[in-house]
Image (cartoon, rainbow, N blue to C red; front, side, top):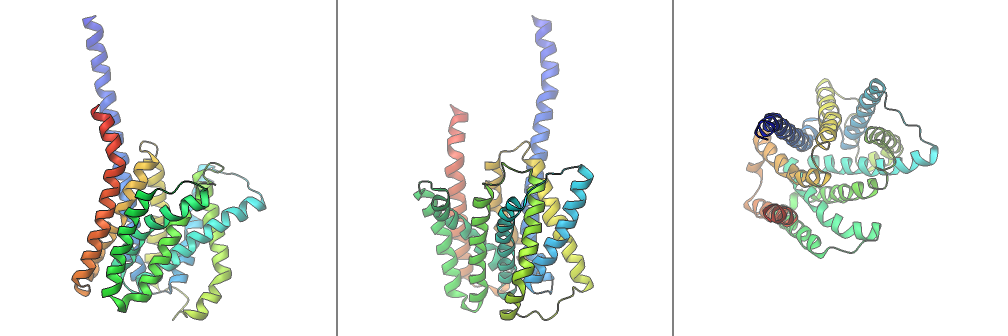
Length: 316
């Protein structure tokens, strides 16, 4: 018995160490993906193109990269016209979310844009029960309302950023709608295949509506400069495709719930990067930080609320 115990221990310890190391790697990959998502606001400010063109080129480059990657990995899934149109509409929601997000960056600043995205929790709590015919979670709605109050405080004392804040709130609405409609597709298609067709569909539909958008928000130029191309390739390759692959790899070890919870840190990363790179804290009053404080309180309370049951089960 003693010999068996020693042999079991020798085999078991490396196995536990391997699992622990794999989990650490998965958490690192997930946080890197969230960091890259927060970095897109910085890139949006560095690119001089109109926000509609930023998204058009981002989706074009991403489609090319994912298409080549799928070919290399031999990931193929044929879809019919009806399925493509169903996916394309979700891709359009994603495209419009990105367009309004970068419009918020350009008409306000990166800090305002990423903070406005925090309203997505409120919109999700409000819209998901309506669209998926579920019962309203009043606690989530209340916590989401804290973020909205924080944004309203910022809006009230930064009225010169009102256009950017309005675009930011529309972007938050798109951010809330995208995963709700995406839930109906994830079981039918491989993640890479679904992403490819969503980007392709979003690109095609955005091409149709951009002329109308340009009528109201006319670009100063259409062809990217050398610097624009550099930032666009970094945005598409690193902050879109690479971040997507990182999240997929992390989800092999980490639950989707943990992934969604971790993405609450995206506005925090975005604000810190904007402060560090553009010194945006010099342009903002103390009321911005009061608003951000309410948003952070909302995120913290939500994280405590959802993690507390798991923590209690672990102690029992």
